[in-house]
Image 1 (cartoon, helix red, strand yellow):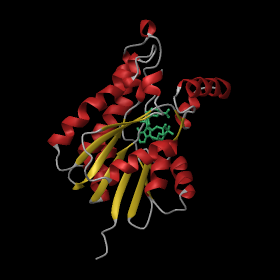
Image 2: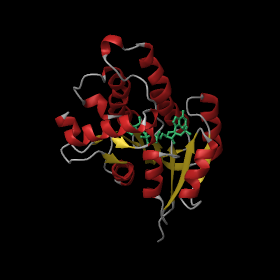
Image 3: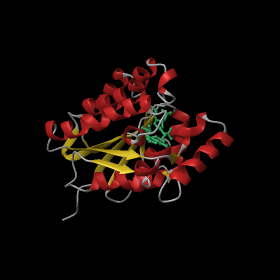
Length: 240
Ligand SMILES: NC(=O)c1ccc[n+]([C@@H]2O[C@H](COP(=O)([O-])OP(=O)(O)OC[C@H]3O[C@@H](n4cnc5c(N)ncnc54)[C@H](OP(=O)(O)O)[C@@H]3O)[C@@H](O)[C@H]2O)c1
């Protein structure tokens, strides 16, 4: 008997890890929808995937847009939550504590709000995969704010895996990954940071979006994985 085609929705699929995940998951058995705020960027991503995915532009931080998207999309099987935020980096002594709330609004609330809005149409035999960040697991100076933000996702995942069962709920924890997330830094500074982290990372390099996409694809496809925190950081957590 032919297997049913599954459908994965990737929130934040127009760039970096989300886009690499779309590329990884796409195949004869999987339909993929990618989203992002910027329609031009989304169109570029769609082209780079040979037009083989569905796309929808909306802001996952705006609950009315989130509801509208999930009302329109119909039943689907897997949700990947890759929307990002960049707030909360820097020494604690001078950290603007408002950035912790800002980071929550940019990253945590959109990821939670998408899962909540998806529940009526997300298959109970499917999965939801959050993306946190290794800052939440490092005892490194300068990451208290961003760790507080990303740590919330690590906390809720095991709870949601029980509360929403049999839906599988997991979280991937990327290390330092070469994606457009880092574009806020001038090229030279970014390369210096990447080189520094490559030196600290046991595997001797920073990550590629494809590395994390493989970890996400594993959680999406393995029906026995739920409530798990899967760190994909080249071992940085143990070395930084
Ligand atoms: N790169 C790293 O080193 C690293 C490390 C640890 C964790 N992470 C996490 O990994 C996830 C993916 O990041 P990335 O590195 O792949 O960054 P990225 O290349 O900047 O991708 C972020 C994606 O999310 C979309 N997005 C952001 N805010 C959104 C919103 N409010 N609504 C809808 N879409 C939104 C972006 O498109 P638009 O801008 O067009 O909306 C883009 O498609 C993030 O949660 C990030 O915090 C990254």
